Length: 309
Image (cartoon, rainbow, N blue to C red; front, side):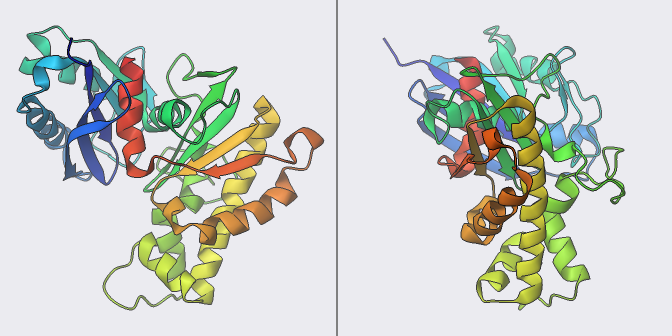
């Protein structure tokens, strides 16, 4: 018999990726397009449709049994909608129904499963990555935004709405700047790649070229630029506060950090460990096992497939 395959779609503020994923978590026929994040709702979904169209042209498409979607959130599993903070045109967008209506999906009546990107990442790392074997873990995606998912009692726990563990939008600065989500002082507004670059520029960092991204800030920090280093330190401090609060609340034994910002390596993880010693003060959270995510940019796709399993 053919090995079951799952069509996986990973939707973020920067890219929309797709792949066919087998039952061992291996990716096949990967495709990716930039997210037109500032465009109207239908233009954003048109990009999702193009990614799905590309997957349906694979000769392995007949072996696909389900579609899994990990999307930037928040999500609403009851309604099947998404409202990503970094995609303004999608507010209550009926993503589940729109994907289910795709002719290649609808004609075969494939089940379609939806989760927030943080939950998908947690499902991936718990299945195939750095959270394997952990009974209670927090898995974070630190990228254009900050998402997270929880593993509790050995299972991924999305919560009734699908947003459990949505760490990017907890307040870590009581009188902080307004966030597009409607709150203030959110972790995402301090620790995301977008925030790191914005803060460095505001403090006077001068990029060597035209690249003003967090990756360019990381390169400057690695070369010893004090403003770039301070921007990463501030992000790490905010992450430490959010991680410590979550660990204190739900009693974690492992934390997995991934996403584009985590690719900066010790520029993020060294100050993160330092700040955790300040915030994770109670005995049962003092020795948190913090690990680099193992699945890199594939985590969202592997997690979307894990939803189907």
